[in-house]
Image 1 (cartoon, rainbow, N blue to C red):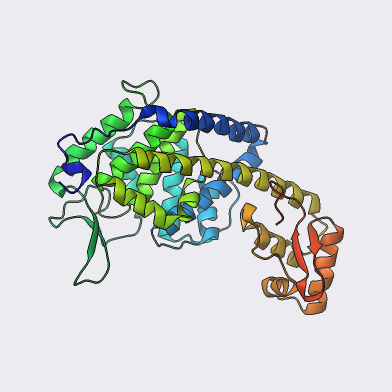
Image 2: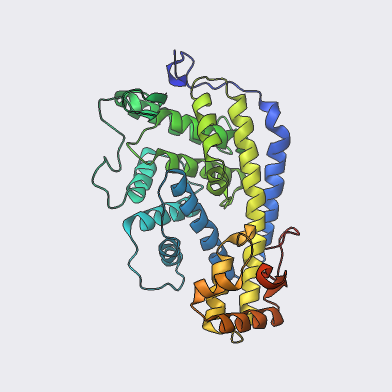
Length: 372
């Protein structure tokens, strides 16, 4: 036996349930903080915040797979999905597809998982593609493998079950997922269920492409069902920052039904994602309030520069904003850049640190005491 699905006990994963008990409680507590913060926002601001959070996840879940999407196109598509004012740009199929899939996840998180709902996600995700089987399980006869290294001596990190048994495996997976949901026949705590769901799905690898993105969406669905609300966690963003470790943990977990290590790693990742979501939420609320306060007081150059800095999120503009950066963003000549920056400091939009060539500018509001 080389892979977990070849074990006679498959898919009965073995783990110590009590190990995650403390983190399960932390997950529910942190979820309450996020939901409580967002609940006090006006509807329009709430939806804009949802678009910001989902668009970041759309970009990062794609980056994990090596696909770089256009943020403005993703956000434009999401704004249309949520009925918000949007520009008239033509959104490429990849950006439109991931936006549609994550919007459906947000809206239908409470619904059971079925073959049909997964096929629908796959059609959205692979919108415009003709090089793979779309909206159906893979059917090719050759092994579905994850490999690296040179062609003549490849390293096989994982091999999925044969295509012929995928329909049967996915029927069992969907039943397990629905049975382990809150109120189901074999309910599992949210973190445990989300962790197992991702590993279980990735072990089957049922689609020709898109398994990673759909697998992470399934984890988000499990987390959302666990709290009875869309989770809006920065899960993909957090995974993308430790992508190599993520793939290593999956590779190790795919070789055994003993999954304590995987559950331990994934639970910590979810909690880190939650903490980052809290920071993102605080940041986006502060961003909205600052822009509202500055409306009518700043020129288009200043607004463009502020939005560019804000795009970096809670972690901030690396190294701070310099006058040279400002010129590059806005096209302003040196004297104009210095004047614009001085006005933004006077208006309380930016803080200035350093002197001469070391002068840097940071957003005036802070997150968790960190300078940005």
